[in-house]
Length: 103
Length: 486
Image 1 (cartoon, rainbow over the protein chains, first blue to last red):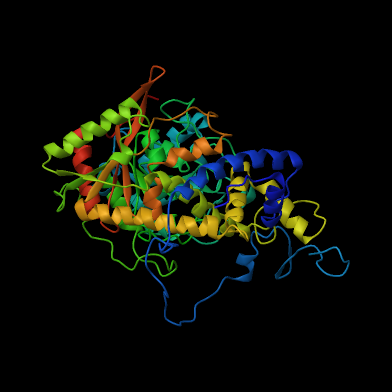
Image 2 (cartoon, chains in turn brown, cyan; image 1 turned 180 degrees about the vertical axis):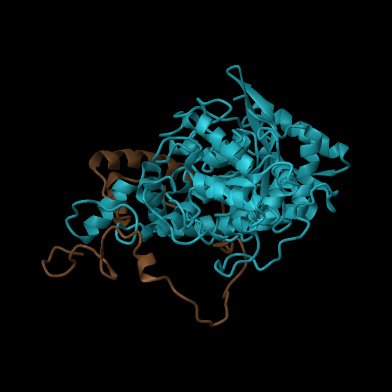
């Protein structure tokens, strides 16, 4: 675990990865708060976990299978019921290709 | 029947025997909500017409079942095909699900009547029900104080007698902590005991639905009818619900009570909490229990592990809120990526943003091993501590929280201090084991009596034994049911 402090640039980068548009004041505020939390989390450095099996889940279960049976899926109108913008049977989004400024 | 004095089982029986009607009970709760909830703000919305129609159907004998006519509340993150499911977030302010969460559906199929959805911390992220987008819930014992969280509305609704049972979800203590702070009984079942289908996800390896009630038996009854395997949730356990889950007055088959020094720090615990714990130990001694000392040496690492695991899972789960499929969408985006980033920035509150960023950071390139993987390894150590302890005892007795309810606003912008509220509850979620919090009397703060809670933790899937052990404390302590003066 890194002992170095989280910087505003780190938080700016994480905000970008998280798809959160934040202004400079928010970045500053969150940096201070995340620094305090990460400082507390660094307590884990006290422990030697060499050879310990990571535990991603509370129950030991894997490969849960069910019968290969045909069932109804979600109806188009249900799926689109809460869409902020729709175009017929589709979700509508701003143009992605064509003008060079998209994703 | 006086709704401010009854338990769920008593009301169920009275309705079944037609001593009271489901319609008068439902109306009595709706009237009480109308009268007092303006100040408490426990409910996000109520379904008066739907509830009364169902009550009438029960009284006419058209709806039957083991919970026929019992008015309950559900937390605002359980999807229903009626009303809205907002997770107390601006992001989902207008979200209308088109299916029912399994736990709610099963209770309704058993005849229960859903009065409404209760307020919560936004996306269940918080310990005070202050991070919600639509105003905080107040503690019915003292409206200047928080009800705890994240299921604060559910706990407050029980304390204020707005319903006779309610459902919450517990990811790091979100049922047990507000139950303690509001003076009600709240239970987190074993991970996998209750289907998570239709429960809006926060941290999928930790989230578990559970009941709030005025008695241990009522918790067993609600769990009995909502739990069990569900093919719609592949993480729900394929283990049958014990028929005798609500038979809590039977003496537990196994009654060794574990005490861990990690929960007994006089520095951490309020004097009233420390005294309640000593009294609880005496109660079990008098009941003939063997008291054994157990060691949970990794307890102090519970919070750091939790805030890595839970936030990492949340950062992934909440990626779905993109302003495209459902939820808030920004008005004037520059392009698609800007649509995502603005919609999310506008739709999420600060605590949700903090947790998404913390989780994203812990999972990001270069930090994954140092944070996430390390946390998973310590999670194993915490789970092993419990496994070793449960070879020597059948339940671990400890406080639910170190202190009674704190004031509104006191910790709101100090995330670390807020996170430390969960110190006695998070480890059960990390290990996946069941826990129950019961009223344990009050602590006097500023001249007011505020509830405190006592917790029992048990081995996975041994809820029947755990509830029977809990019932011994409940009966002997005479602390519950407790109700505030309103």
